[in-house]
Image (cartoon, rainbow, N blue to C red; front, side, top):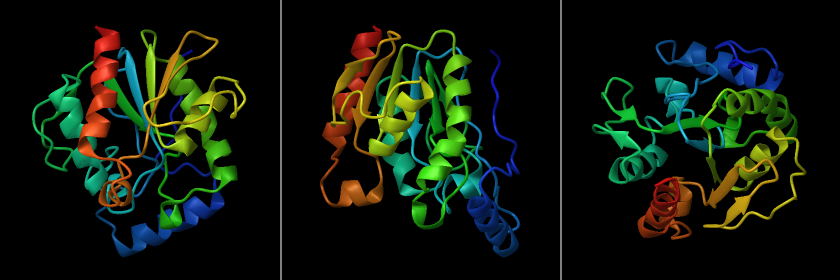
Length: 211
């Protein structure tokens, strides 16, 4: 099945549509839409975040670009060969992903960075289609509990089939490997819940598994 991505003005979630319109009125030069995935479809690794940040991907139109979370994510992907170039928090920075694609469980920015359960469910179709459109996919890295559950749901599995734990590696029934990490948010890094060495260890392990 081919990739089925949401349109930039996806109408599925009324609350997100209203928030998008509010942001568009205040900042008309921003992207203000359902953020497309980034990276080649023939990648073996897919990174799944939670949702766009209002001044990050919602502004720039590229996942994890323009806010703090992108710094740790992309600098680590570069370090372990999943990206090339330099991350400058701008889609025009020239950075490219290698054997890696990045997306979000929810494609539109939610108020207070927190999508509702209904919004997560509504957007899950697009995550399911994303995985189906990646013929060489072997590993999915879920950043946070919500993304972990969204990935399971997208594969038709119970959200509680395997428990989220930082650094955990789960072999799913469909032979896909699900890897967990705490989200690369400023809150998690500022509080020490996620350190750079902790996140680098997760990416290093994935790189080793993919050879």
